[in-house]
Length: 333
Image (cartoon, rainbow, N blue to C red):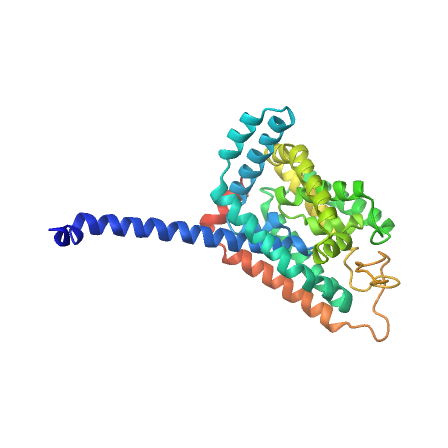
């Protein structure tokens, strides 16, 4: 009797349904983790942002909703409403957030040391690679603007010119930055999690905090990293709603301004800056100087150009592989 019940069509269908549900859950967990890994890898290098990866892999809307919901829990905690805070935290989409954050942390832990060493040993080549990533991000972000007009073109060109000019005053990485600089860096870098097309690592590079943060991850300086995380939490609470509203109310202008920022940022990542391209001085540094010049005798020329082209084509290829059902809805969000 039990044997016949075990083999009954009803039990078989139930098992088949259960197996399919388990399979779908595991597949969702795996794909979200992989997307998180790609976002973490993108956030390490000053080129493609984690927000751009979220967009082209079809999870941008869910990411925005999750970040905004998480930001809404923080005021309850600040007011001392612990029961409301716990209730709000329980309502967060943890089945999405945990594998996503896990994948990002794994990417940062695994790749930070590799990228740090490459920055020291091959500064021109890495600059070329990052330059290709930014050029691809500009193309991707420009496709997100629903309609280019005189106002959006003016916003992009205006921000590009201002950014290009201001970045001429960028003097390179900070040496032993104070704790408040870590908080500000974390607060500003988290913006890249919300806005597609802008790299948090690039913002750190502009502020001179890219090398210190990368070195802190590599050297396991948890005190500094904790202060940096505090800045991320502060930025999440302060900026997430603002940036979300800007995208909803002034999407095209906001994206146009970001595109202009990326165009102006090319000055920082030009592979052959005037003066020394990289300084080490017993601790990891980043690209130094924003004066523009041509390659000097003996400087590598072909490799930076090749890597720029490869990075450009690779990022656009990944975006092209995203199915229309994933990317189309997000363009209008």
